[in-house]
Image (cartoon, rainbow, N blue to C red; front, side, top):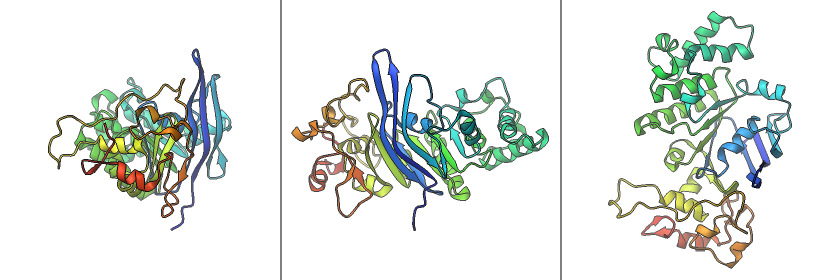
Length: 343
């Protein structure tokens, strides 16, 4: 089946002027996303995940920001679009679920009133009564019990899981084509996390959404994603299908993220696995591969920045930034019989 992209991002670069000098938060991110697909963008805090997707909808614009590249939604170019054009796109064509629903909702207004406001801001011909009815239906569609009563609740009266569901309902209020979910399971317990992921996956398939899921948790990725982008220090270091990333990862950083997952079907380790060191400052990136100072497999050529290339002939869409050849990678990523990064 061919992938006809709905959202196509090419060589997206986002920099900010700071008191300490220029900071390159996103450096050359590209991807395609088709209807019905889920793209997971994974990486540690500060890797550029949220900045990349927020830039697509114009949320990083400021006098000190430098934005380059292209982001096309159908025939609409979003980078360089006017503020008025972007206001029409937000909500109407691209819905966004923010990381913390408690701070994303206005605490002094009822949840339903905020959903009604979102509907009527884009569709002024819809009356208050009809918008209220749609808000109740939206809350019901995302699995909130007793939606007729909950629609009149304030954000603080809902649990964390319910607030997140309400945020998803607001994001879907105008039937968008693209859904961006920024860390939608943060601060939720494991059971509620699973429910939220199942909800996003169900809505994605039922509505034919093109969904971007931002997370640092590979457990979340395994539940929902079709395609995966692994980001480190503002750059994509590996991209591929879910199976390629989980079963044949090519970049040492990906090995470290996968190896950091705790396994309940294995004996309890003496020490929790981790990636040594800290991510570099975006104001002073190391020469060559940004992961080189933390990588136990670094060698002389790593002082030169590798391109994001397909290095295994049998997988032309599986690309990474590592100079090691595929056979050497498969040998070195084995740590006690599992994929991981040597300490």
